[in-house]
Length: 207
Image 1 (cartoon, rainbow, N blue to C red):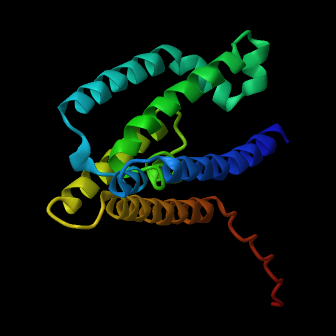
Image 2: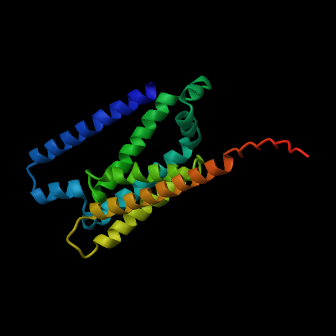
């Protein structure tokens, strides 16, 4: 019930926050091109100072994740058990939200605010379809997100279409492929575990 409530709260707050962001952009007195760039992303707008800032922020995010990885994984899998073992579940939630906010702030500059979730949710959903390992799911999520971002950047170079449609298309294609692969493996595993039909009793033959 708690997980369902948290999901409902997230689902309510996310579009509300996005609406507030659009409102603040509309009230911003700058140029409309800058507003559109914040919504859809402009990789060419990332200059050297911003690149240095993004690299430093990425290093901080990776360092924090390396420190809190084990307790964060425990709290994510079994929050009640982690709290009973003395793990600061609420503190880890706050740390994770700060790290997630930093990651979103960096990604917005490249892919935009409207489609940044394609690098946060879709790769993880695709990884869960092909693996249940607590180690390989984050690794595959990073690989899928990196492939989507780099592929979108390469396809958007020299064109007039923003980077976001390319990124979301690649990310969605990876999710569909992983979903099909996961369904195929599930059906194959179910077929192997299916019990064999019971043998029919032999009928007595008259001599």
